Length: 114
Length: 114
Image (cartoon, rainbow over all chains, first blue to last red; front, side, top):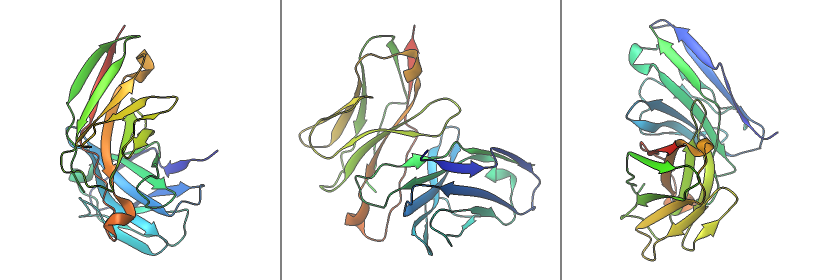
């Protein structure tokens, strides 16, 4: 089944403790992206990647890192999490960046930073 | 990316048609109009997309104004399962080389009344 898989589904951590949220897709998609969703603010893009080793900042990249060493994986790294990074995170992918290609989303990761 | 504007919320009776509007007055000639929806506790899912002509699929219809400055997502017969947040976004892909930010905004929360 074609899907975008995020792990973990829920994560509670403390300020400053490095964490990684994984994202994997099995559709051989070139384009992948991370979003955070906060009440009243909608979905905001954190980082995106147009292919292996090609990443760029979205609208809210501060405090996050990403890497794209393999086509299928696009982990989101929080080197030193802070409480303002408590949010619902979604990973998405599409075949490529063509404007008619649709996005596929993961089920989300609810992160709480205490 | 060009911005879209949607009403914050709408209500509709079950089994009635629903028309969800989206304004995108700064749309460029190469932007595709995409609609996604987010059911409670799930990631967004693709609904439909189009460029100039009206589009139909099994989920919905997309009506695009002649000047392309607005579009309307039409659910022909709303059910309780259609209660979700609906997002209208513009994707310009390869025509905007080097920049593939995709901002979803806050969308329209659709409530279906039994």
